[in-house]
Image (cartoon, rainbow, N blue to C red; front, side, top):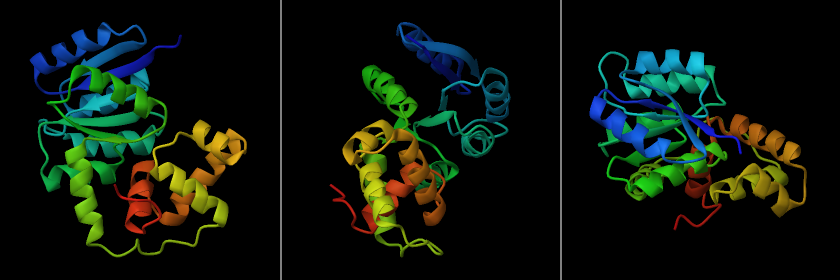
Length: 214
């Protein structure tokens, strides 16, 4: 079994140690490092190429949002989970727009955090229920994305399945096509919608009523 390589970024040493202790108990997770600020996180991703980063948002120097933006731009294969104490709009929306694959509050149960790491590693998105509710309120008051291009019928199907949380492998099985073909469709959907990742594509699908927001 290939272990999921995880990097921890938090400016509180006790939090880093607690997360490391929890994750090192998991047979299929390997902690490749822990750092205290965003700049160190970007450097550690460059050196260690982790699969998943647990990123605090409020840190000295380079904050978590800027670190997420740099990591997702330069190392798109690395998935970032924002792990924070804050549910404020000025934290939630910038983190999602920066490319966070997940957004969890620090009151998350240990088993749910482990599950979240597996979820985003598998290519899916994961949001704390309270965060998802805030995002739904936000997108309900906005018009469609400017410049969004028309999707083909197949791309529309792929978008609907993305919004339901399916991985590329599951989408391939659902539609009876190759997983490689799904990846091509997903890339085309993101480009046409002008969004950075699957999370933002899924939110667009809900806003346009392609899926039930519940």
